[in-house]
Length: 275
Image 1 (tube, one colour):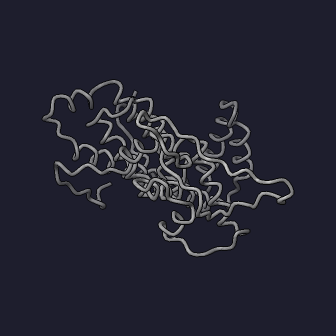
Image 2 (cartoon, rainbow, N blue to C red):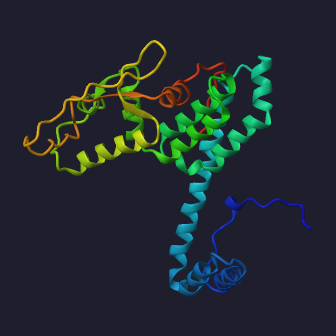
């Protein structure tokens, strides 16, 4: 077997003619070898005509560039994490080398597609950095935090940040705090905003604000009974200013892990020209 390693980035896309026919043949062979994706690959091979070769070439170039960009993002994230860790600290060094922490790293980079923005990439960096240096919560909870990065949008996280340290803040106040302007109650923006609160409530991240006693037990709210014949219950606005919200314990810990940036221990710079 030839031990020489071939770098796919250095290869030219297939040209039209004989090579293109060989490439289509390879797709057809792959189509028969892959049970689930076979139909798709065979369809691609059948539809790939000589005249479309240049379009395919451009697509492959974009795809390779996307992979290169993703690799750079992962590389930058790993460097940023390591530059925030004091590896002279024996406890941190042991934690980084542990199977448990390596499992978190593998999970994170296996599901990298969730980091579709720079802000989310920073959340991932912060989660792994804090997971290496502190033991406020269990690794099972940290895995849940990583799942949340994939599951929720940046606007979800803006709402979480707005509620943090503002127990009792209302939806109307949160809307203004995250910098949104006035919109109609029947608009798509209003519907989206209500959906965000349903997502975060059912996800166990936020809840309606409740007073607690000194033992941490929730104190029941006083209910205002409606008299008969008073008509239907008024609809609650998407931007209600009556009911307050707060973060759950999980939500508080998420902010600690994902939105708290550790200071740099080592200065570094990633060369954007480096392949």
